[in-house]
Image 1 (tube, rainbow, N blue to C red):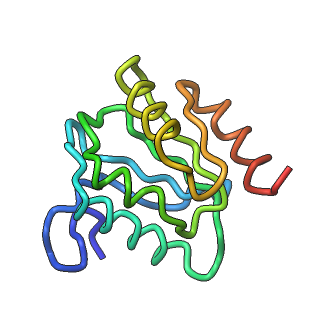
Image 2 (cartoon, one colour):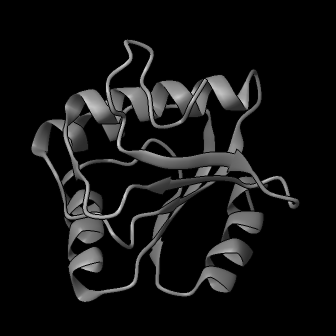
Length: 131
């Protein structure tokens, strides 16, 4: 299935979703996307579908995300196939979005915000193994 399309054929807001060579599932949002509940639902469904029966480390590149609605944040607070989630951003706005989510909602698995991809990956390797 095309990552840009949700199961009902609407725009999911996802630019790409795939495993990298180290086994990390990487989700990249479209530039400037305003994530709403249907897009959050579609993203979670795609993560679960792609991961299959396994719980996997998930790297979410949110560097170009414009906003995340309250209803989308509630969707993201539900468990999914992720064993651990690293939120990768690039700006103070990204950090505020991530910290707001982490402060208001209980994340379904270990979740942390990073601006450095190498640190995010190192943390994911440890957190996904339950260390």
